[in-house]
Length: 81
Image 1 (cartoon, rainbow, N blue to C red):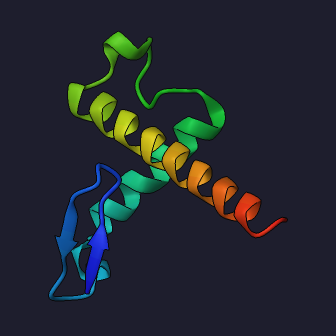
Image 2 (spheres, one colour):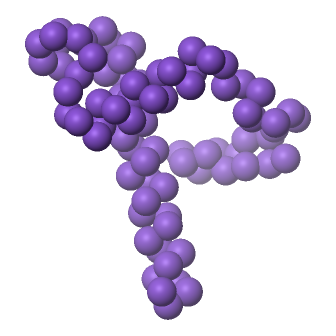
């Protein structure tokens, strides 16, 4: 399978990408969605009090969601919806 990453690079997949999703990955995605929906970070304090890995993951997550939403809006516009 060949896919196109949001940065425009081609990705060649030789197995189902769902096999990469571990239980921990699923938990992280649920946490990211919860933080996005509630605006409450997982640890007490502000963003400066969160682990750097979480801040980076949240940034990637929110950018990917925004890119996907933009693509969906463009598709709807193209198809006259």
